[in-house]
Length: 165
Ligand code: RP5
Image (cartoon, rainbow, N blue to C red; front, top):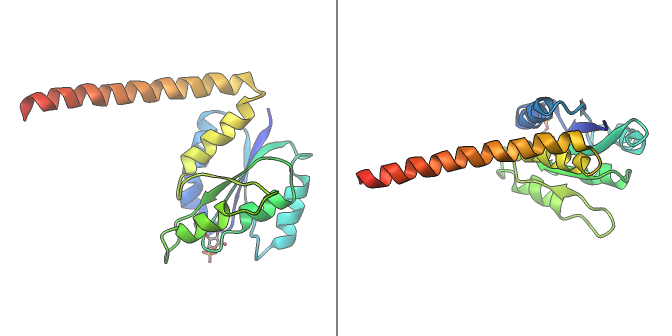
């Protein structure tokens, strides 16, 4: 199975990325997590992205905050799909990160999840790998079925509450 790379711009991003790591773990999808910064360690960002396909990765999640160029820089150096995970920053609530990731110029796409959307980043990575890996599809289908059950249960509970108002 191809691996997922989870790159964060700083160790201070870790708590915002943890849900992605947990979800990948739950699906038993192999992943590697690294701290690599587009600005502070640009050569490492280039080196990692250029070699990612040969290193066995199938998709890269890039999490960063503030002037969040990490996903874009990584996408510039690889033909693998890159998922940007905008981190909620202290001053602009993550809008800065979101816009830095999502407003990519033509020719260098970055798929971007919501600000703080760590679980969705992992689910999207799983769905990308699932295009060619049937074992992941089963896990994704179960995830969706469980989610359906949960929401149906909430709907039932709501119907009961409505009778009491
Ligand atoms: C970004 O700057 C990182 O992704 C992080 O979200 C933000 C702040 O980094 P630290 O100053 O906390 O290391 O590059």
